[in-house]
Structures are given as C-alpha cells and as structure tokens.
Length: 352
Image (cartoon, rainbow, N blue to C red):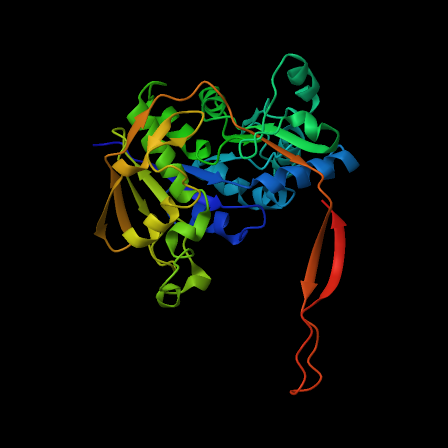
C-alpha cells in the first residue's frame, strides 16, 4: 500500500483561530500539525517584547493551546512543527515543557528547538566583514538605518527541522524559518527525500505554500463568491495528503465548513507568489507554472507535476527598523443628516 503522510494546518498567523488546531488533531487522522505564526512585522513586535522582558519574544497563546492538545498529541502520536518561538524559541520550548510536566507527560514527548536565524547581535560583525546587506527594493545599504534596527532574522529552510525530527523530536519549535519549510520538513523526513531532489523539494514547498495561511485555502480567501462558501463559521482548515513521488491532495476533515476546490487553491497559490516561474526558498526554487490542479471529488484537489530547480546560495534576511509614528483614524459621529461626517480623528499615535 502506498504510504500517505497527512500534514494539517493549525494556525496561519499569530492571532489565528485557536479552535482550529484542536479540531485538526481530533477531527480525523493526521500525522503532523503545522502551525505558522510569523510575519515580518511579527518579528519586530516580538523583539520589542523581549527587549522589555527577556522571558518573552514568542507567541504566548501557543502555550495554553499546547496545554490543551498535548494529551491528544501524545495519545495519537501526532508531531508538531511550529515557528511560534519567534525571537525566543528556547523560552517558548521551556514553557511547553513545563506545561507537559504539569499534565504528567514528562518522558512521553521530546521537544526540538531550531535557532540560528536571529542576526540582531551579529549585524555589526557582518557589516565589518563587507556585507552591505542592501535593501532588496531600494538598494540602500543597512548602514543608513543601522542605529534604528529593531530586529534582524534570516529565513532558514526545512533542513534544521528535519534534523530535529530525525533526532526523535515530537514537537519542533523554531524561530524564523520559511512558512513552507514547516510542511516540507515532515515530507522530507517521512519519505527520505534527497536534498537535490528538486522536483520533490518544490512539490513540498508548494504544499506548504497552499496551507501556510490556514483557512485561506479552504474557503476563506474567495474574492468573488465568498458568500456562497458553506458554513464559514465552522470552516475546516486544510490538510495535505502527500505521496512519496511529490504528488499530494488538499482536503479537510469531514463535517467541517468551507470548501476545497481548484479556484480556492489557485487563489492561495498566487498569494505572495512573485515570479511564478521562480518561487525562491532556501530549499529550492519552485516553478509554479508547472503546477497541475484537478478536482478529484468534493473538497479534494489533487496537485501534481511540480518542477523545481536548485536552491540559491543566499538566504533572505528580514530587518525591521524604527521609522516614525503610526496614526490610526476612526470616523466621528454624525450629528445631523445635513452635515457631512468628519473624515476622522487621531485615535492614537505609537512609535513603530
């Protein structure tokens, strides 16, 4: 029988629906729960939190969530990959370990930590060695804003997560790894893919890209017909059912709301895509023009034919720096039908 590996999306961003991971681990058979918490601005927020309290700097809501689902994970042998560690993955892992001990699960779960992405304390050394770290959009060197930098993180790929899984980790907590790497790593581990199997690396990357934003791929990102998507209040988050040859299907648990279809998967594919023939990650360069989608049956889309190219020799670095203030405006009350309501009033001003 052909081996199938099931990877379920549980979170698509920090602040996503906390009920989703619980439903994913209890709603049907899965092998991995993937949870993506990080965006570019999230890293600067977490770094500011850590600067005020060294014990912080990670997604704090990850801890009570894990406390809720840890017994299910241990019972069903479901592994977790999550970048909830933010800029302090060690503290995040320690908090999860404490929660596990409180549940009497000591010795039953092994936690892996991926670090090395945080470059904040290494910037001056990199600049001194001749790395200009120029802005990809403007070409300006980092020195122009060095005194205002708040956070700096390199995007690591799937392989550090693979190393943790190969050492027996049941839960892998990372800092800034690519969103796609959280899904690709379990596939590499499960199918023993070679690092230079570029088509399969690209297929796993595409799988990760489809489910990285949670319910966006299962009905939440419909631009034209979202009102006709059934029961979005009970939306089922997407699941990858993958095969060793790199093909996979996108599904969701039975009895959940939302919809898995070719238009919805396509809309998620073009999210943050850039050059469709060269989606660059640390693990490979995926050619999105080769993707073939087919509706197998209701709420099941098959993805195949993905081709890949060798990875580049560089990593992307996300750097955030202070740049003035952010103003938020809200409409004022209308006192008379004959009077035009005010455009807005300054509700707050906060330094970024």
